[in-house]
Image (cartoon, rainbow, N blue to C red):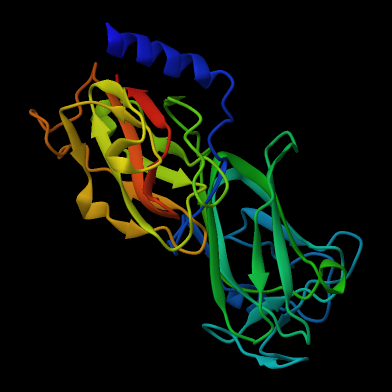
Length: 328
């Protein structure tokens, strides 16, 4: 009875809790479509244009600098320093405009690439994601060192992005060099229902959130878990159970444990949260740890959470909220 009362209290908090993050940083991936600007150069793209001649991503998207002739393909660019193509013979660099805009024929679930800065000034890049109704989904930022080196930036977009605007904090939004872009098509719709929310705040100053993409059809065996708003450069992993519970400040840490025995740890997915404070794990749905049978079956309800190290004095660990997924 006590466990059921705690479970009900946890669910009651969910309605007032913030939604799981819609934009989750991810590492390098190979998408459905790739873009290195080699074909546009071969097709005669030259000078400074308002939009990329021949489109991009295998004719599935446009790249423009609205109101300016800022699209430029070059074999190298010298300004504050000399930047060369990361691969191949060509790179793209915006020369004017308030930002570089990418519009997709179909929403993309993942977007990323390599970005470089050849200007005399370091800055910050803001990447704004918009859905098919032109509503802003989120605007993550990343530092932009002016060293003419290439740095990967990538994101999982829950709900899918139909338009993306990349803008430099300096030069009015221009001078963002891009190479080896990747995009994965699809709506990127999140699955599952968050509970036991919000989690207790961690040293990032925010409560950690868990989310997932994939399919609720057990036969598809398609599930990827994400944890966001974690402290940077710590380590953590995901947990699973078919039972919920509630143990506050578990193990002397700051987090609330919202699962119950038997529960399993995806220790093979132990990883660093990185500079962005995130975790990502592709679940093998035929090998759920510490469960018999180990498979996710139609009709099952599974619960997930992520544990991570923290750096608050006296509280060396924390957890996300929970995620409930009902499989068909």
